[in-house]
Image (cartoon, rainbow, N blue to C red; front, side, top):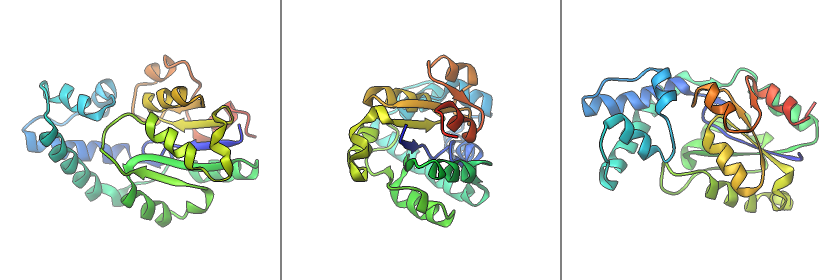
Length: 217
């Protein structure tokens, strides 16, 4: 593999507790009980609207979904000061660079909030491209990954077989499969490990372990 596409939320960025805070704000407003991490992992899916419908036990229309998504992001944002990079994120980024791999970042977090956060955490220099969400929230990652690869400098994305996606969600694996890239799933909290292992791709307990699994020493 000569290029790594890193996921952000739950992978490089250790934000699972922020996700629960943002979700908690939504559930509080709806008069529903908050959920713990085990329940979140058991019920989480994409599109995220389907996940909310599982929690609410009913259908959610487009206008309500937009309002819920805004409420989630406000709750997440309020807790943002308490989050940091994953324990070995910087080590993994440096190690991949030292091995001669190019790296980019693709997140389903809002682009205009992602970029300053990556800058603040002082890791932007590791990436040849950073893309966050510019369209409708909560959908599948595959079309965004395809667009991200098309926009990578130097034509590196024209050969998906030379690309590995490292992320924490089943949707990362589905997106990688759809574009023809490899994938390693990181056990970062979005799903129970057994579900990650059932996806048919390698599963890592650390980001540096993910590099081991694709032969990046």
